[in-house]
Length: 126
Image 1 (spheres, helix red, strand yellow):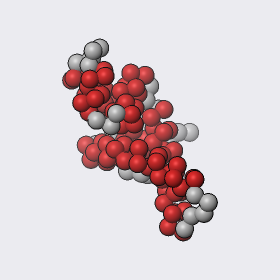
Image 2 (tube, rainbow, N blue to C red):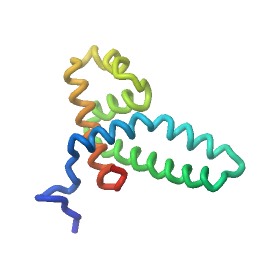
Image 3 (cartoon, one colour):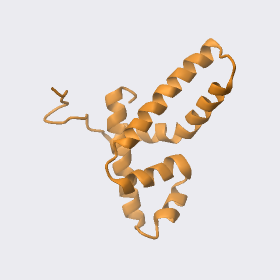
């Protein structure tokens, strides 16, 4: 039997603060990935580095899993571009602006961030 949050909700609903936390975490994602690669290349890690490495690996795995739970491929593509590729809002608007308005792109980013926030909330990261 599935765990239920509230009335009939499979996932806990994300509030405004959860979305802000998710955006902050997503903004740090590229740095986390680079740090993981750096640690993987080192021959040995200090205790602090090992602790950070394991923490970052967990966070990146949770974020990757949350991204995969986004059902709309266009939302997923916009979100990946915004937070993982370009990392700049205006570049995302330029890339997707030919097919969608700024408001539509912003709504899709918000939908994606909300999905990620709900998943990260469920995992305990938020």
